[in-house]
Image 1 (cartoon, one colour):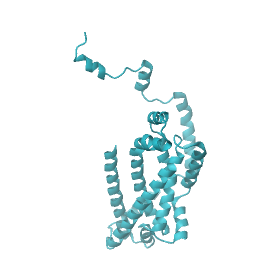
Image 2 (image 1 turned 135 degrees about the horizontal axis):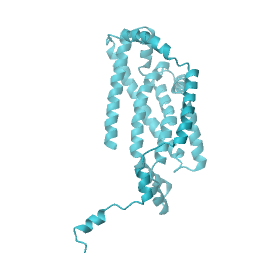
Image 3 (image 1 turned 30 degrees about the vertical axis):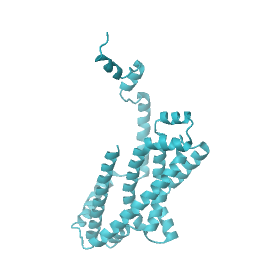
Image 4 (image 1 turned 180 degrees about the vertical axis):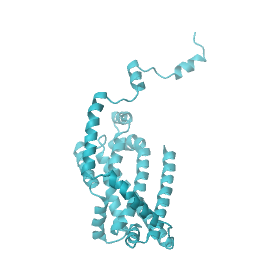
Length: 280
């Protein structure tokens, strides 16, 4: 006879898995031996071919170590005589990254709805993917030059370049995050007659939200670094000041700029890591 203390324990026991399914879950990850033996030589051949075409030379790297050490020695001691200018341009760079991230994330989310195979119809899915591939294949500096010629020098051109560049990169990641959600809730909602909007709002977005937020933070970190590079072509930010210091051989000022950029990126990285831990 079953006692009352044994009944709750039996009810709370997890369901038993079939032997085949249990063996599959407990089996360690393994690479098929035949594929590995065939793929390894091919990978080595491709690597050697790429190193030859790219003129990768370990000997020259060793010989150039002395020159690299000499260049790094010129960066010390750093000069913070123009610290006010550096802070002002870093704030501008940060502002560019914030606006570019918000606009880029919103537009990327809209494009991702059209590029997710479990949401969009085929006639919309493939054109959206092609558009993102085209945008992703164009460097951000090209977009920056295009917008500089359109709206003139300044941070506005950099913001537009970052926004457009985000569609190709983060839009694809957003779409893949939506495609990776559990199909169970989606099928259940479709079975009871939920509309497409309701499926996206209650079935897709709640599951994909942690990944979307994490990728948006990653986009923001990338845009801070990207804004530094876009300044090289006059698209605002601290990049122009960095280039000027290099051309003028003002190594002390160059070192101060690099140190400030490192501090800014580190602070942003730590803040993003904290937010990601909270949401996951």
